[in-house]
Image (cartoon, rainbow, N blue to C red; front, side, top):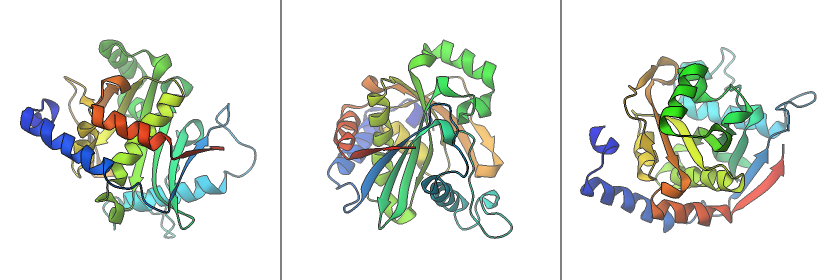
Length: 244
């Protein structure tokens, strides 16, 4: 963990190679990359959209991970992840054969108090943290809800989804990113390889429901690794914007 938080030349080289590999990999050939735009007030009339219901099912199944996180499968066997941030967020969804294979959520911090970081830290603690980091909440965004089919993770789709989040933030003129990253299963390594940084002087947060310890990460889009910024630019061309 220390090496990742304060990378030496060797680890910086390894991170660069991770991104270069993903730049050379086609973005899930045959797939479509959709961005669903939230309603202005974070609500909808009647039932939730079918795409969101399917997205929540997919996300829960990925989180469940063959029983690693049992809270994401209900007693009737249905997978559900009804995250309160969903109605306020921009959702990037990679679709293949009419089914989601990856997703990620972009949330304006100023849009709601339902973000993952705020729920983990509390409103006052998050506000103090943003002030300490010099982050203006009006141009800040949270990356969360990151899920990728296991079979596709080795092909670079996970990092590409992270780049898609950056592309959405760019289009929305959001410049400062923050997120909550798991430490046990490789997620944090990918996040740091992009150039995001661990928040200093903040211990990992145990989250039993996720079977993980969570670290808060942050970074300005313009300060991320040049190779990752290139991946953001490349991925932006794939995005198809949809109404919520």
